[in-house]
Each structure stands twice: as structure tokens, then as C-alpha cells.
Image (cartoon, rainbow, N blue to C red):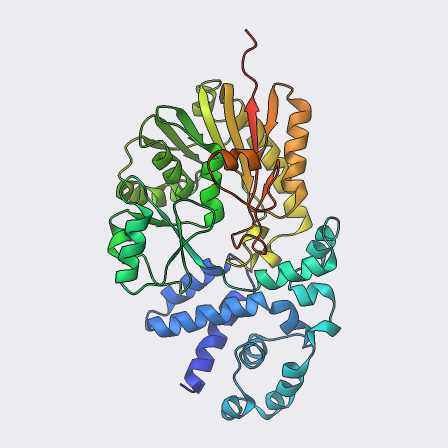
Length: 422
């Protein structure tokens, strides 16, 4: 179907709403759609695809103009990256715009700076260059420009992966087992899954394969006392509860009432009976102090830059800065220190981020171990091997990469509080 003038106007208006990025892009889009209830499902999908496409290629698009407007960005994006030809769009645009389209379509990427080729901010490229070659940064940048696949997790309390795969195939949905997670399924076509009976009955949940693997590092057992320290909307909590076969006690702590509120319907669908969601004021909350030294396993997925999720959240390239990462590091250290106090002797803690940066990852753990002599570092590769999960290029630390593992860019480290010597 040829692009119409009305469709072009809608794409420009949606882009204009989001591009200042005064809030997360998905929040701004949701707000825009609420303000324009007349938009149909196809219109909304086209606007969302265009806005996120522009965010993925924004460094290139802005490099082509002195000060790019939302209109120029949309036209340049459609013609350079969506394959719309000049003849098709010419009736809808101004004469001056038609003149610059051939130049933008013909600009060779290889002549541009690495940050533009990789679509990463210059400060982030500089950070990555401390431990990556330019070729690898470019490869990473290119994979981060692609939308992420849709991964789901089978709720093993209610279903088996083989059964779910069969049901999806019968519904005509292309689905494959994830290569690493024993309970993951990848849906390449990204179907709308939240109306499918499997979802409504709690048999599946949307969850990136990398996020699923964190649960297997923690490896909670039946009957244990377990804490998900920064539970958010509870995706990893539900996995931990399933790994515990709904036996024991699983606390889901978070500072956000709203996130925990979003968790409640998911928990109800899951069939789990061992989960206790609780809001805390901060990592110094009295609820936590009462559990000090009593917990078998703690998952600490700390607030972080999110730079490993750029396939899903390309707006983070403008919403994170060097100063925001320095602030996050202070928060990460504080949360890890508080969470570690919960562990009993011999207890295990998994520290996780969805960041690519050593200062949010290895350096936080190394600093913690330097000041806590009663903790030891476990080997992630060995822990996975014990569970017949075979990942490439994983050693003491887990660093999942969209480039090598086709997951979000998760980091994890596993530490254990030394058992009593008596």
C-alpha cells in the first residue's frame, strides 16, 4: 500500500511527541495514543515502528542535517531505511525535501565516525574502546540497531515446554526452543501473545532468555527462604517461584508500589503460592533488617544504565550520561551491601545488571569482595554446566551479549557467604 499524506502526517506528529525524550519513549508513545483514541491498531503500529526506527538510526539521521526537524527525520528514515523510493513519496513532500533525499540514500556509512556507524553516543564508544576493538564495537552497534526477538518463558508449575511448543504450532505461530534456557521459547514473528489462552492461563510469560538464565544461576531449592531484592514487575520472581516448585518462602521486594501492583495479576495467573510481594522504602528498610542472616538465596538485579537493552530501549542512548552512570554506581554499591546482609552462612547471592560497562559490573563486585572477606566468588560457567546449560564464552562472570548470545546484554556475578568453619 502506498504511503498517504494522512499517514505521513501521523508519523511526523508521533515522532514530534517523542523526540525531545522528556520521558521514556514507550511512556511518551502510550500517552500520545491515549490522547488520540481515534488511531486504529495499524496506525499505532506504524507510528511505534517509525519512532523506534528513528531512535535506532538517530545519530546517522541527525548527521545529515544542520538541525533536523521531526519531519525531516521521518522522511529521511522512510527513504533511507524503509526502502520507500523518491517517486512514491515525492507527491507528499516539498520540492526542497525531494532534492536532499538522493544524497541521504547515497551517503556511505563507512565514511562517517564510528559512533555514527555504530549508532552509539561518543562517550559510550570511548568507554567500550577501553576493552573492545573498534570492529567489535561496530558489530555490537549494528546488532543493537535490530529489534529484539520476542522470548517467552514456560511456567513449569502449569505446563511443559514441549506441550506449549505444540500448542503454538497448532495456532500457526512460529516458535523455537531458546538455545540456552531450558524453559524458554523464541517467537521470531513477535506475535501479539498477551491474548493467547496460554498467556491468559498463566502457562507462559514474556521474558528475555538472558533474564531467565539469571534464575538458573541462583538455583533456589524447594523449602528455602529466597529474596528477589529489586523485583520490579516480578518476571524473575515468578521464575524463582517455579524453580522452588512453589515450596518455601519467596519475598519480592521493590520500592515502587506501581511495579508491585503490575506484578499482582501476573502472580495470580502463575499458580504460585509461596510468593510474598512487599514494598520497601529503600535498601535500609526495617523489613530487610528483620531478615538479616536468615536468607538462603538473594537475587539482586540492580537499577542500572540498561545499555544492554538498546534493542528494546534505543532512547536510553540519550537518557543516560556519564554523570547518571556515576550516580547509579553509588546506588548499586549500596544495594549490594544491603542485600548481602540478608544471607545466612553458605547462602548465595546473584548480582545482575543489563549493562555492558565494567564499572557497573565487575568493578562493583571486585570492590565488594575487597571489603567483605567472608564472601567468595563462584564460577558462573561451572554453575551452568552443573545444570546442563552450555553457554559460549562464559567464565567466572556471566556477560551475555546480543552479538554472541542473541539475548539482552546481561551481566551477572555469583557470590557466596562462607560457611561456618565449626
